[in-house]
Length: 431
Image (cartoon, rainbow, N blue to C red; front, side, top):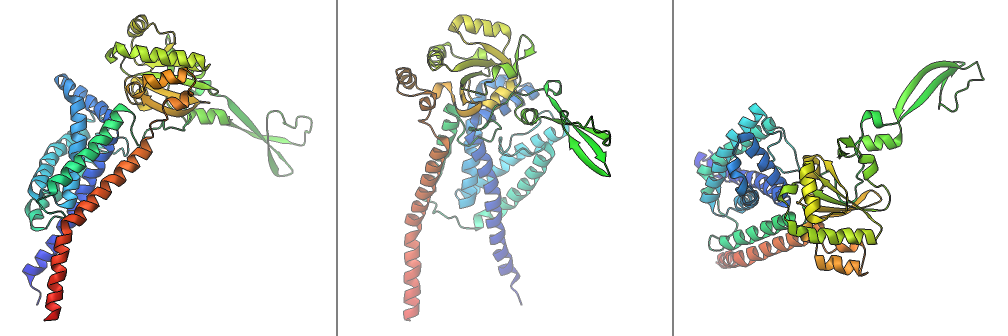
């Protein structure tokens, strides 16, 4: 007969381990993609504040963007490895107690289109997000009772070291994402992609294909090849299709650039040669001290015979004021706020394109004035100005280093237990 108590304990352990891994993995992924792109989290928080009418929270949103990202990631790691078994589960429970009603409200009202739980990496509907949170809440509630019965991976005496290491790792990722650009770009305007202006149906060119039939056989003709002289061909129908260029433009970005209320996207975006785009997502919040570096970049662009433009989500009065203060000689056009934030993070940001393709993009604050000055003096071109930063390479190095140190700590922490267990087995076998 099976011992029900022993059976219950056995399956409780496996259920706890599974739930730790499942819930922890969700938190790790959620915190990681938020830390990758703290600007995106900040923009999402601004949407929440606007929907709730809590403008008094605005000064704290940037800190909140970092805090939420780091907290979720560290909490997830603690759940997976079993560190701080009571605190981590209670913190998870309280987090879900807040988030579940919030996502229910979003599901009912639609006040914010996407909760931003997984940043730009995965977009869930508000209803799907609410269901996900209900499942997590149930799982965490189970862990509240049984989590302490299952041992942790690292001993309690050193779990603080592992936690600090995790905080350092995810904080570094968030800082890079804020001061440079996200190490992984989940948005449409990735490096290497073409930035084609959005066009309307009226601006596209249509190609027509004419179908004729002869002796029961149908054949397609272009407008220049219609068999007008051969009356044995009978017209069947005409098909309309967009030209290859028009299809490419319609399926590309939604970047609409205007000047004095008229769209000038096709005239402004260069498909040949070098082009610098200065992105002003919030012109009223830009420090005037940035004008020195911007003017250096402008001078270098003229030296390299490169085109330079500004794109701003601002009123004409704000643009005029900026031109007066900065003595800007480059044209500034209008673009939609959300699209500019998708194009590049930071305020202001710089996007360098060659033949219509994005080569690099950076926040202006991450570009060294000394490096631009060297480039002006002949050290290198625009590609060289920002090639000192490669987000993907740095992320791989940081992640591998973090995992390696975590494994070394685990080996050092548990090697004595392994030794004692082996010695006990040897002694038992000798008897």
